[in-house]
Image 1 (tube, helix red, strand yellow):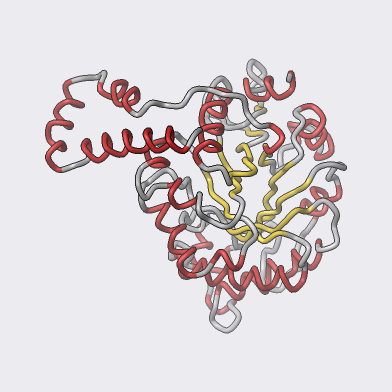
Image 2 (cartoon, rainbow, N blue to C red):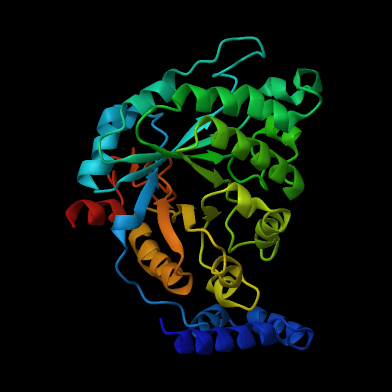
Amino acid sequence: MTTQKKSQRRSHIGHLFNRLTSPLWFIPLCLLIACDSGTKELLDIAIDEPERKEIDVTRMGVNSFFVNPGFGSIQQQYSDIHENMGLNYVRVLFAWTNGSQPTPNSEVNYGLFDNILSAIPAGTDVLVVVAHTPDWMSNPANWTGGNPRATWVEKWLSPVVNRYKNTPGIVGWEIWNEPDNTVVASDAALGLEDPANYFELLSLGSNLVRRINPGRLVVPAATTAINQNYPENLNYNKRLVEFGALDLVDVWNVHYYGKQFENVVRNDGVEDFLEPLPRPIWITESGARGVNNQLAYCEQVWPFLREEIPNVDRIYYYEYSSSEASDVTYGLRNLDPAFPVSDLYISLKNR
């Protein structure tokens, strides 16, 4: 997209959005929405939703957690991703859980993680997300020096990076996942919904990776979708940059779900934040629910993001497989015998 064309569209959408959200328009707009079921469609047309375009598969990856044998062995799932779908990037999760270390003094069970990394096929690189805490981390008595974030780095990130620092196929270490959204109760002990606390964790983690495994990328955690819950999610990202997070990482990481195109192109929106960053942008989670909705979503949203934000590099689809019902799943594959694969999976396999 040319700079002039982009500027014209940003001006049009920004002007429209500002008018619709101004106090003078608030009451009439609410009345219009209440009285006219077609208002949403009119607004969608007004913001000029992007057309569907071809996906850049050469820069596409996929999230895969390799925990459900219903989709085959780890080797078979890797083969499906790499050989059948032609994807070279895989994002995996190494979660610190009660199952991996039930007590502070018990041995860590690395079995699943060993199996995931030993099966990486040639030509595939793996981004390892290191995250979460076992229940015993909720007790301050188990923290080192009274600091739960330093404890997490010492007792989880450090052993993991040391164990796998010479393993081929790992492209980098992602330090946590969506710190602004606590989904595991014990994770609340780290206080990561405060960006200052996540910055501390990132700083400790980055210094460790740079020292122990300097050949690998340091990737920060993405917040929940940067285009949603405007401006809170975006502001969390901004705070990290203000603290100095760019000096700690090799790429900037975001998640993108839904559409909310207006929050990308509006003044002081997602584009204005991401485009000037002196780092490649990786979108490590993005996708849509429903086996018949995934292809259209990716063909509309991903090319739009690449046009608006040229430094977007990799985009990882969420996710390879899921046990959710076919009409609500994000999975490219699912366990519904009537709809075992999505339209996006079929498109990737048949191209």
